[in-house]
Image (tube, rainbow over all chains, first blue to last red; front, top):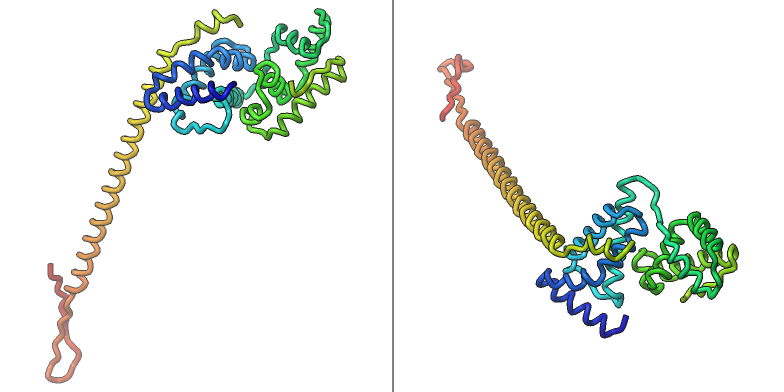
Amino acid sequence: MSEEELRREYAILERSRRDPRAFGELYEKYFDRIFSFIYRQTDDEDVTADLCSQTFLNALRNIGRYEFRGYPFSAWLYKIATNEVNKHYRKQKTEKVFSIEEVRIRELIDQANVEWDEELIARLMNYLKDLPTEMLEVLELRFYEDKDFREIAFILDITESGAKMRTYRALDRLRRSFNLRIKYDG
Amino acid sequence: MSEGHIARHRNYGLLMKRHHRDLRIRRLAIVLIYLLLIIAITVLFLVVKKEEQHRKLQQKNERAEVTTSWVSDQDLPPSQFTIMHLS
């Protein structure tokens, strides 16, 4: 995201503090991304709709407290969404799920510049099912949401080196099991 | 999930409605908290005032307790004494 875009977003945020209707522009811009992000972690359309709505409501409610720390506004939304998803699972007392779409797997394989076939995708999907949640979280943010490590650290409330370490470990496992060499820093 | 599916859930008007309802509830809660606080302070003030009045009355009663004794010509102890409560 360019500096110009960051400034434009911040101007909208400033306006939203005085008039919540101005927030609509950011809502329209980020709704789909946040919805998909939550959906991948719940695999339930109705639950996702509720959590997504709650995410934007929380953002709107706390917009006065938002401080610009060099991250795009979307990072703050992802952070709220992550908290909402975690809260949902704590309340439900169930295991967190990750829905992995085949298209996303293909994108991941494409980054490794490897020829893919259906069998490889099926094997990889099975493999990812067994990866710990914390690794799937960073992989998702790094490769599907295209976030840098600073943003990942902010969203997941971990350190930047922690985010790098988790990504590196996840990719190292893929390299050892499937000989997929994906650059961990993109 | 397709964009059309997601678009079905996108409704900023509804979000604004929820936001305004939340604001109303929050304002109402603040008013209620202040009201309860004022009531609590008033009750406390009245209780303290009543207690003070009660204590003052008690002190007055204690001061009003007068013991009268007679000393007879024979230097005998008083044959009777009276306690008078003055109100």
